[in-house]
Image (cartoon, rainbow, N blue to C red; front, side, top):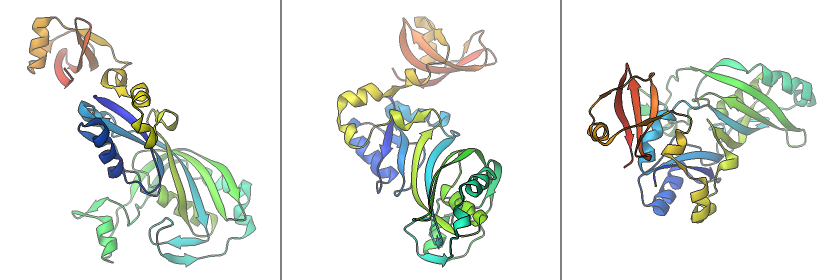
Amino acid sequence: MDGIIIVNKEKNWTSNDVVQKLKGIFHEKVGHTGTLDPLATGVIPVLVGKGTLLSKYLINHDKEYIATIKLGKKTSTGDSEGEILEQKNVDDNILNEYSVKNTLKTFEGTITQIPPIYSAIKVNGKKLYEYARKGQNVEIPSRNIEIYKIELISISKQDMEIKYRVHCSKGTYIRTLCEDIAKELGTVGFMKGLQRIKVGDFSIENSLTISELENKAKVDNNFITIEKFFADKEKIELDSANLKKFLNGVKIKIHKADNVYKIYCQNNFIGTGIVSNNVLKRDIVIS
């Protein structure tokens, strides 16, 4: 099988755990399009077989999350696993619904983030978490990210928690966002819970849990083939002579607009090609 399966990752599973599980199910090359913290749950698009060649089409996808902030405590990791570094009182006015909603809205648009020290971003050739584990200081460069929409879901005054939904660009660290929201409210906080509900067009409603991946019928019904992934792209039908050229990597003159196209021969899906300056070249071939 060549394509994509959307997995609803469970808590305490690493992204690599999911990949290894699917390798055992499909007996194919398997890869994912972005890690999700072990403490987080939710959507991971997993690429299977020649579907791994689709990764270049998935790298800039935006994402949607549901996150919970625990107010009053700051941790070393920005989540519930770290050591408590600081504690502050949380007054009732901090958890005022009107105030929280207005604070969340201030984060919409382009904002600057400093990624957490416990992350896989490389600085001077080393991942940040490698510095953190050795207790070494390092200057972390800031980055611009985009918050398209952020909205309040609920407030628990008893537990001093805020739950919110956020639609954001690739590269957004929700742990950092939770800390920054808490700071803007006048206190400290950490990310207590995180669920990724959407990656690009892949939503949690179309995902399968780890246990459901053992059900072949469910996998078949939810599997996104390469042909289906490019459903909105135009078709190009090649004759046998041009198909041979295409498969051998020979560029073919064709009068088409620059774009990605689905390639067929005798109505059989062959793969995809890219047209640039009226020249068709091979992209992904599955047969």
